Length: 331
Image (tube, rainbow, N blue to C red):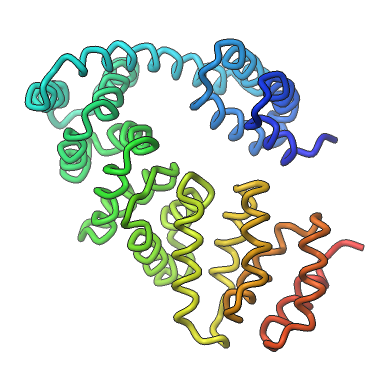
């Protein structure tokens, strides 16, 4: 069976031919492995070449009717976004704000029908990407209108992939008194929106709430993993390491190891490289956490070699963690 991680790496490589071949093979695997479908969807979101888009769509068609309907819908929304983007460029900021207000006012407190919202969402996304001054207005509605929160969250997650203003506006909502707003903000962050200077604050807040729930707060878990395996990978890992550095060497690292392990797993080759760096980190509690996260990478010889070295680490906690992980390694 083809190595799915290698196929996902090829799917995002530089060669168009290799990307298309990887898409075809992932399409064959997608019905049995959700990871293949998620990778195809992620690539479809950012692909621009028409030949590649058609190959991706065919691959999704191999997986399920729902997957190919999603692809058709996304292509239609892209066309709407292009039209709305051209329109937004012709308006002043004030005019754009009024256009957004009027568009949302149409629905009052009632969510629009899905088929109708698909067109409207494309317009909002295009406007938000072209005129970031409207993002605070969208966030205000997202916070205050429960009926529009879910569909606005979908638009904000796409806008936030390009515009860090979305992530910056969502982080304060993680401290909101209404837990449904907190969950909704975490769900948008989980799509891997771009974080700016407040990346550390985002990770610190999410981690505090997640650990406070004894690891049961699913939106927070998904947000940390989604941000850590997305375009904010380096910033999120740096924040986790900084937070770990304030904790004693004897502290419990199971929760942090699990989070880091999922980030590594979902980040492909970049994640493995990050893990190898952390396994050599000067702070013992960071090495111990990285050792625990290594359980996702036991098929990687370099990781295994480093774990073997860790059994001779100066820190007892690191040695014990390495021995435990290696004991579960297949022969």
